Length: 172
Length: 172
DNA sequence: TACCATAGTTCAATGAACGAACTGAGGGAG
DNA sequence: CTCCCTCAGTTCGTTCATTGAACTATGGTA
Image (cartoon, rainbow over the protein chains, first blue to last red):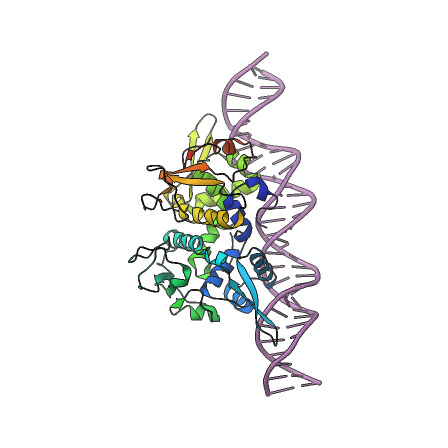
């Protein structure tokens, strides 16, 4: 838990949101789930996160209703983690935060750019399409590598994201 | 630092943003600064945060260019912390996250509602004014207590926020 | 039978957060 | 001049979380 006993005392919706997604690693797990990462091992390889922490974070997100844990294979039994509609709605805050980081902390230009699938135009930090003017949901969004991307990593997820990819669609 | 050595390895603007504002308490400090909190003691009383942690977080935010530390009185010497323009741009992610928390984690209805100062209409989770249709910057926003606010706390900041208040204007 | 893959759990060592006490600079009252 | 107060921190021992490596469990494949 992010703020322990202060949860009630704060009486603030931001504090309650941070209880769920404010812990170390959690928002990066959500980001990966938005890209389409679903399996334990793929999160692990892409994030370089300790296994115990990943396990605990996935459980917290499932409990909070952000992720759904479901069996995708019976023999041997295997589970995958998929974003729920509640998780989809984290798209705007995640995008807004990433855009802020892009603008103020990135020297080399954008690492990833997001486009509206149906028209191809870029979307801004408020998820608005430059051409259509509508708020684009994550399901109609495509990620493309940007000029600032270094592409050092060679795990399956990083490799898949070196080409355009539809958000939420399974990776790899 | 939020992710230690993984900062470079991640090659992701969200990860870089989280290096700055992803640590425990940090985003709540930023939220308070957006309300207009400026003095060490006011952050302390409103957040119930250990003094050492607050001190460290304020220093990190100043170093990152989110807050500006400046003298507001010479005898005795006193400093205050004020959001920079870079800090103002965290408004969209902070609001989006708070709205998400409001929608999905709050049983009692909104605790705070945000209005466009110049027209009085509510703004949504993407900081867009319902009437004007424009993206409202934090400086033209007013916070008002919502029906879900419990109002248990009695520190100066909590008391001031029980009536409408213009964002960024000094509290208390 | 031996080996491999996936998805975890366990555990010792390290690091961060917590809360209480302390420091220091400077009023203001008596 | 002395005592007490405020504000803005720092210091420090205890507690809690994170880390990385090793281990467990289930079942498939050679």
